[in-house]
Image 1: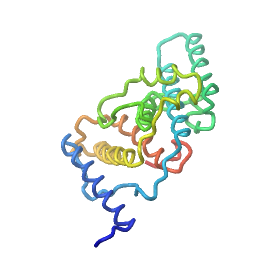
Image 2 (image 1 turned 90 degrees about the vertical axis):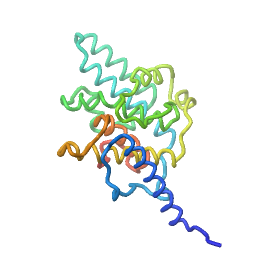
Image 3 (image 1 turned 180 degrees about the vertical axis):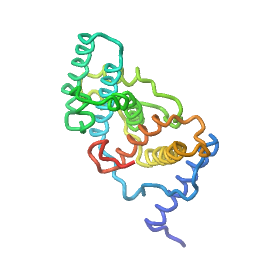
Length: 231
């Protein structure tokens, strides 16, 4: 009788995960590298807590709203009032401890034009985190933008963090690892495509891919803030 050791089980899971990702990618006509390994091993990953993921999902939604307000064509009084309303949610949800350097600049209004552009895409980070929390059904399609209004609604209907968490059901580590592996390979394709159009990306949107990979990788990593990740 043959008994699988932990290393053998990990190897089998990685092989199956990679095969599953490549099958989906090939079907979409996206270029892939068969030699690219999985980034995480199951036994070496500890998911972040539902508290931390919930806080980061809410923070991402708030940052995205601030980016939207900054780009909106409204008078300064209306913009300032909207900003104050959105920023107040940070206190309501008690999520000050998950604000990194970029997010702080955006909140304080001391940000660059690129920061504002980046902030608008935080809806995709929030969408991926909401998927991890079981609030979104599927995010495999890296070419279709999320439903930003739903991200806002998820936060607006909750009076505090505990109420938001009560609607969540954290997905399994295996499910999150599988989705991350897919976006890790999506990212490889869009990254290569920037310099050489021979690398095909199908219908992928590079900004969507970057933000969703960032969020998924944060959940699987031991870093505290988004800007600590080295994608």
